[in-house]
Length: 321
Image (tube, rainbow, N blue to C red; front, side, top):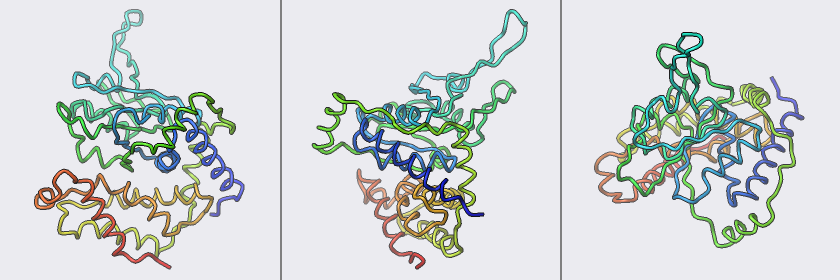
């Protein structure tokens, strides 16, 4: 089923408008916002990794405001409990019954700030919401709002007293995006933006429109050649001598949905190889586990070694013409 040209044009225009608006407030964020849109439209989540002060919280807040979505933030700490995320059962003195008091996870856009600072038990409380779109507490199951989009952050420098995010949870994030320091010109633009803030011109999408766009993704055409290409690319990551564990079949399924979302954002109802090439690094950099020899050889630059393997895998697989 083909997608109406008006829908394709409207989606593309909205994404560009939001990128421009957020880019005027969070300087240099246009590319990150594109990945956030891909994750949101494909019903996935994103992990942002970067030093303190790179406007990760502001970026998440501006993204939710521009789309007209409810935003909440959780600052993760070592002393947290799962109920601090999901909510808890409380006794109502008037009704004499146990009632579920919803936690901050009940929103459209959740910023899980410094997620690696909280114990695995608390991290797993977020896992059910991310994957199952529901929360279970005391035998009571509550469905999360639609859409539910998690933006998690972690600091790559301060690792003392932290709890590394489990591989099973990392795999639930469609992308891991490494944020960098701005250039000198971008840092000047940050100061100018504080003097003359911009306003959002286009109408926010809202939850219903985002749900409709998610359904449109299923109508984006993917050829047999493209599917062969992404399967071969994912399988290639498992063949490297430096890899202990490569990307899983679940990654392949997420990859397919993500490239369809990227095509839709680009105003197309069909996928081309460039849709896949655009996101391979961010899609795979947290899913490849190096073997012991590669870890020793890499020294402190583990992420650099992983990027090299991803680049080698991408170059070794011939894209369809």
